[in-house]
Image (tube, rainbow, N blue to C red; front, side):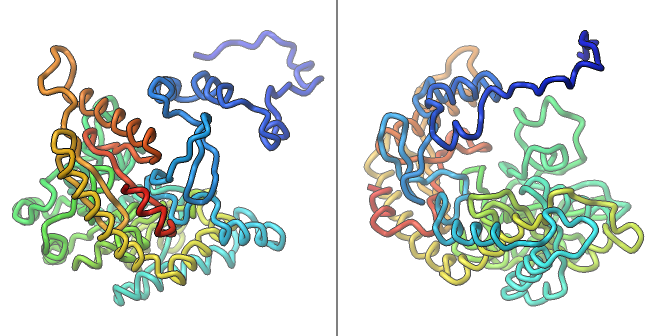
Length: 453
């Protein structure tokens, strides 16, 4: 609700407004942890922070090393949180040194919207080269840079709609998570997230891993489907892998009908699952790929949509080449950090390290499940994406309390227990009975073993 101002407009700029907190205070560490939490509760997502405070998990956390955090009480935690967006840990020296060098020497525009940019151009070339190294027919693909995974998914959806202008429907899968902006939200089948914002875009949701269900829908509705959107591993849904051969068959079925496949690799791409692109490793060569989390190196937000040339140009052709744009996407600092992040990933072959440590970690997790059969139901992994499925803390239904709420409480208590044992873990947005571990790909061996101990 708007209100009419009461001050004299000619006198409004006589004195500068007072900002209650200065950067010098933050740099000096003068703000107490309790003050930080109070500000978050008062001015941010207060209910979420109040719950975290109640559970003793609210922080703020101090970075001890790239792989370790310290709580306000002085306890040290191994950093296995970050939702796969922390590929090297917090403030890895290789990336910090590069950013300092960039800030001292860069002469490029910060946001080069109407000019070429060497950092944006080089990042795009490197992303296409990395994809083409495992999927050669993507050598002529193009890149659209964004600020997040959700924006990358929105871009991919618009590309598909432009490529198939008579088709207005998408196919997605149960327990998928593609973001919470309105387009991406339509692809995220979670009633709690979707219900307040309907009507959403037309989507057909199928069981994950069911190739026959895909075949039946395509046989019946192919002309109405703009694209199939799939995660090669369900990340937020709880690290579920599809049955062997499913992704390859999905690609074959879509290709038979000329329908593009969008692989959402925001969480699985760039080494996390032990491969540069999890979809390609499982036999699918997608037409559009979305990336984000590890590109920013835990320093800046970066997203990217890679698409075959003909699909890209369907959205951005000729004089309509500004039909989709992004003010901050492809900014020089973000592109530079993403460039260096890609280099570190490739130079250190962190894809192979994720594969090796992933096997080791999953075996440890399975032994943990065997040791605690009343608490844990299953351990799952895909490279350095790990998940525990939790058993309910109550063996009965509570009248008037949704089962989802009990599952969410179970997860929060599990996160609290892990923190008390020295591990900072991840909540699962689309799997309330799941706790995930996404340690940095560079975590030292001794810390990795300690994490699972």
